[in-house]
Length: 219
Image (cartoon, rainbow, N blue to C red; front, side):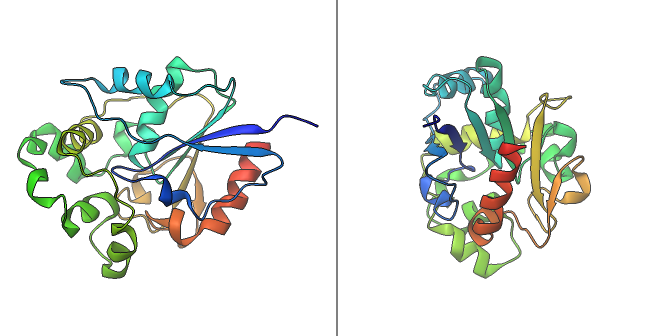
């Protein structure tokens, strides 16, 4: 009997393991493991945080899958790991792929006045995470935002909008929805496009993404 392929998932900003409830890979061939968010240390850099996240991976040569902000963290994690493959979903490969509003937020340090202390239990956090357009989508995703710690949120928002990566990680595979409102596809290069996919397609297109992930991992 051949060994199962370990597949580690890093969720989106503030999201918990439940966001992967619609992702299913054949259990006889894959072992899914979900890395939950750590609370950042004081003034912790993204690289140091990524190192701590990487230390929680026990399996050699795993597949690493990062979603949204989790995709950014996953890309920083690979410098501390030997991975079979790295896949990002609904994310960005370089800071050039960030939308203008995020670039300006980082450039002018607007994140310093982002009122995370007052939005931890409101729809505003969901809007920042998944985009502002659909009320139905906000309601769908709201229950999955488990990490409402102010220290984590302040840190994560700052890291997202100030991320400085000029070149993408080698052999990275990018899966992106054509209707993503957080990271509009017009800014995204070299990706597998999911028709009708939004920023929360992990929840709404779980079956399609599951098949796509299996195909990409096996390729």
